[in-house]
Length: 268
Image (cartoon, rainbow, N blue to C red; front, side, top):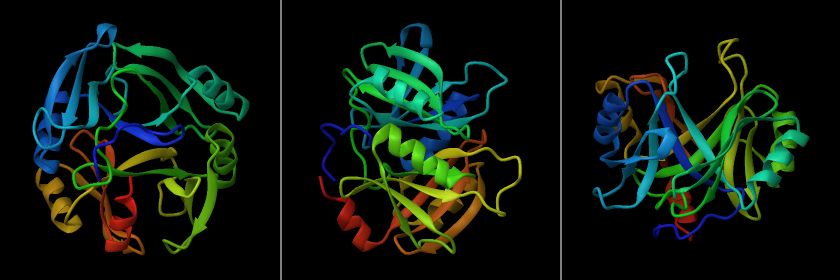
């Protein structure tokens, strides 16, 4: 699709990796997706890596920073656009979620806050200054989708509906019910129930999915680069997808959408 000029409130706008080994993670993602990157110094937050598509001057696709301390876990965080961070944080608290990091300016890029939903799944809010979010989405090597794995899908439906105004629509994508969340007619995110296939102690979480031209080849490439395959390439109605973890353990999805979905997601 054309490069993004703005994101509407409630839409996923950015994905950010927290890594214990930024240098190694950078090599992995550059090799897997063909990304380039450059480093910014962002005040008290230190160095921040911006991944780009095409070349180092290309549109931004994701960010990366080092884990704040050794006790943290490597992970991707999904950011959602808001026009009013204090109001959205109030909605998070009213709906039973938590504010886990108070609003913070990220240099001149934007203002962010970290939250968790009532089941403990982390996500972030983004109010843009000079970085609207991803410069391109819904094309190969860029983010296509974000998905919540939840142990209480009814509570999650209530929470995200209250916070972002999302409308839940059930789909038969898997052998169980899958939830699409919509803003108007546009599907902005999905949700899958954490049933018996998940380890008992595995926490609820958000996962970003990146478009790849060949799911099988990209999954094999991720394994060759030191990642682990958690769900092998699998066909469902809208796509062929796989779940992998990178060499540091951060979880992400690889997805090759069907022709119909490609046409739908190519709309501005």
